[in-house]
Image 1 (cartoon, rainbow, N blue to C red):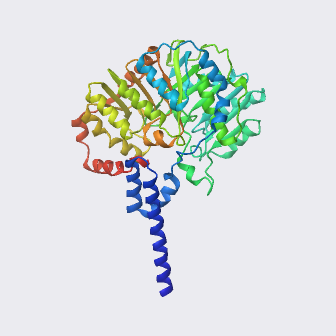
Image 2: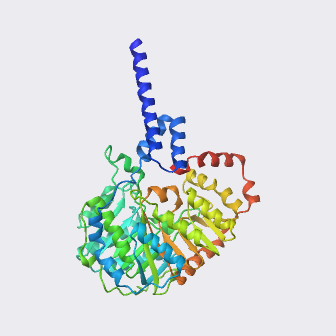
Image 3: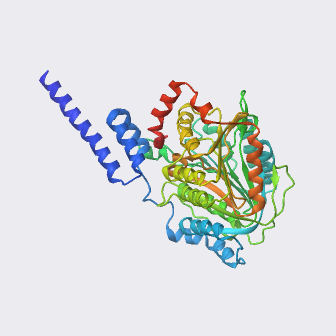
Length: 486
């Protein structure tokens, strides 16, 4: 009996020391105070659950690097040469500040004379992608967070197998957590046909346990180094056919031109992270790229002279590249800011920037789905609506289905489409990629996409919002405490 008491006492002391050590580690990590307090609250009030979650999800990798500086210099040697050979980009001071920021912190190179097509439905995007795949001559690089074993996924898989049999080099990169439910035989069929397939940051216990929180959320396709796709759409049937309760609304972009160098660089760095093979052959960065449309249907076919910069962010760099770029764009806006995002859990800098812009008289509009795909995250999103309405931000709730689109446009000057959500996870934990556009034609096209979706949305007012049930207000407030962890 005494031995049992001693054992439990020692276990309790060791357990509490472990919890205390985790709290001390959180404090000494010098992370965002809001996020640090969320972890401390969780560790204090739910120590068992909090310790497990912190082990899986809480540790920071900000001091690590995916690739050495020497390796990166080798990889971008040709894109850098092409960038330096460009004529001076004629852009306004507001645009040049954002471009310079991304150039300095992200090594993102802006290129002009790109052809841009925009897609606001997955069917058109998928038809265009399939045509690009079948027209490939040298290589196909595909990277998606989700690549499902359903009719849509199998159709693309079979097309890739056909191209591999023709001698085209095919590489596929998918996220290990995003594709947890996919049977490995789906990828084995590609491997057996000579396609190189890798999963990003495999979650294998216990070695990669702490990596489960850092997921590759990028959606990147590169065809022959000349044609690229980027946006919010994954490869799954629901993106095309939606749900029984509504459509799936998303936005994607196709780029033809030297801006594809940025997509190629992002893919090859991610490939190096998992395969440890640095691919720098010049044929992956062709010189003579014709900005030509493939003739497939799209929502908008923008001019042939778009200035495009591919920007990535990840949890292993020092800066929050895309988040900081968003803040710069919001602070620079003088007339309007339109944003679509499936999740609205903004970091403090983004929240403050949006409120400040609205209070200064800028027309700030944010569109979110009326019905979410995750109860807890949607509740967290709802908790920020009061902050927006009080500052004069117009909040729209999309009613036609699930809004998964991630876009922003400011003043007909700067616009962006990509994989980045307006939430803590995208800004701080995920590997993300966005295309930033610096021409009026693309901005107007993205603005038009937003305004068309307004017709299928409900504009919230304080009166409508404050009339919701008390139980919803309570659940939203509780979940908001942990929004930095969602």
